[in-house]
Length: 203
Image 1 (spheres, rainbow, N blue to C red):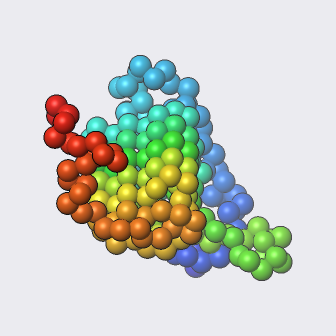
Image 2: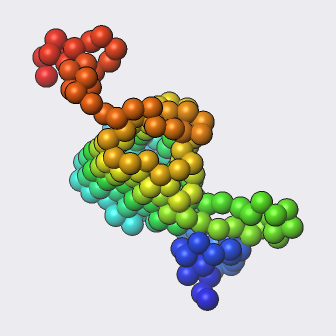
Image 3: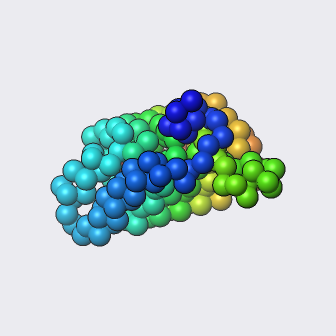
C-alpha cells in the first residue's frame, strides 16, 4: 500500500517519510507566508488560502496566527466560515467544515493519533482519521476535537470542551469528555444570551 493511502486510510504509517516531508515543508512555507500578511491585506490573504486549502468557499476569514500541520492542504471549508485567533488544524488527513460555521480562539481539530503501545510510538508510527463538522456550527474557545469525530448541523460546543464522540445535529454539548447538554429549542429563538431577548435588539 502506498504511504499516502496509509496516511488517508487510517493505517499506521511513518510521517517522517522523505517524500511526505518534502511536500509538507512546501505547505508549511506557504502557511508561514500567510501568517506574515498584514491583516488589512484581505485580498492577498484570501488568494493564498485558496492556494493552501483543498477547498475554500466564499467569504471565509481566518485570523492570524493560524496553524496547520499541512498548511491546509487537506482542509475543505464551505462558505462564510470564520475562525478566531490560533485555530490549529492537525490536517494530516481530511477535515471537512460546513457553511457558516464559526470557531472561537484556540480551537484544535486534530486528525492525527499515535498508538498507545509504547514500542510503536518509539518508532514514530502515526494514524489519521478524518473530522467532519456540519453546517452552521459554533465551537467555543479552546475546544478540542479528536480524530474521527463527526458533528451534525447547528451544533454548539461549549468553551473548553474535548469532543471525543460524534454529535448529532441541533444540540448544545459541553464538557470533558464532551456530552450533549440539550437540544437547540424554541427558547434559543427568543433569547440569544441568558435573559436577553432577541426582540430587544435591532437586527
